[in-house]
Image (cartoon, rainbow, N blue to C red):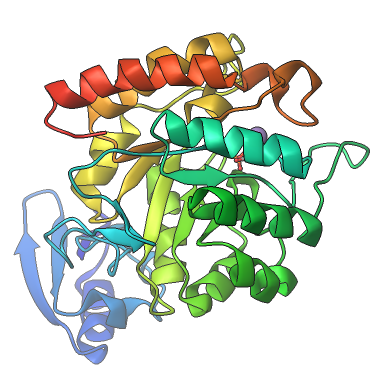
Length: 337
Ligand code: PEP
Ligand code: MN
């Protein structure tokens, strides 16, 4: 931790700051320049958490050296984490694709969709049962019935399943059915929910919040990891910017930044990023080129009549073409698909 002292601070004030740091069990290194004094606090920075250093008289600014996230950081674990979901290895050399409808609507359309995305090379089936909708009057999902249909689709195709958990009270029932628990963008900072999925021990796909910084994103992952569950997949799904041409703005640079900062696998969801099916494929190609470990794509057999996110959903034939395109890029960066 580096503490910059105000120009006008007296020696008495500086000594008080030093005392506080030493009192927390850290050593100090003092650098007295012509203009100002800088104090380096050496030792376990977490011990300073209970002291509000910024509030001490004479302190101008405080700069932590250590990252606030620990368990999910690359400093903590050098090798990239690989998460095994029913034999599907996420974060390994194989590029993995999660596909399926935004929401589970009926048994027939879900199984039809599952079979088709599997044929094209998707390895995990998605489908929302509890839907986070902006309007309370929109389709809210089939709830537990939707989870049951996902389980039937898994039985019919062998594809592991992922679905969103919105409420801590549903943790047990959602975990009973799904292979990966999805935490949606709107709940990225629902700390109770993060703690519950952490405790569940299930693999989690954590989506980046609509206006979350990368640091906040990683702090949310840290909440899950702090409960002993490090089976976390991070998913960049577009953030809110001034741009209105697309639903959100895909932060493609988040992928290499995250890869540097954390050992966790990183996915991209281009469907929610752009909001228009015609733009999904170019972003999917970019995802594999930039180093993402996989994709989450919305696919619907009949997008025109989809109950949710039809505009950004690909028909299965279009999804098959996307997979061909992504496969070519994957080969050029040494990844299989
Ligand atoms: C979804 O995946 O259907 C979804 C609601 O995504 P997000 O949380 O990224 O908006
Ligand atoms: Mn959706």
